[in-house]
Amino acid sequence: MVRLGILFVLAFFGLSQICLADSCVFTVTRKACPGKEAQSYAKCEGQASCEVEKRAKDKAACESEAKKECFNSAARQEITDSKMVTDVKFRKKAGDEVISTGDICATVDKAKNFGKCKK
Image (cartoon, rainbow, N blue to C red; front, side, top):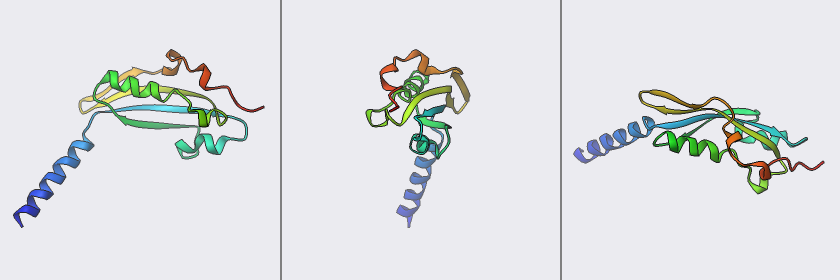
């Protein structure tokens, strides 16, 4: 019985630490290739824009996570025409630290990953 109590306390402590972990929050907005809206917007539950949250230990890691979202995989280059990542915030227990309000992808060379929609 004591072991069960100890396991419960450890599980609760572990879950509470995950919930309180620092994170990175940003908005991703996609422009779909013509006729590919359903596929392109699937990552945002059918919407062109959505808020994304990733774990991050500090502001630099948050900025890095946001910039990773700027790229378009080879498999999706004929599905998504362009993508913007805006409103990047490092969310910590003490409050949000704004990293960027504009399109952080403007600072990343991503031209080769977009604009490949079939005409």
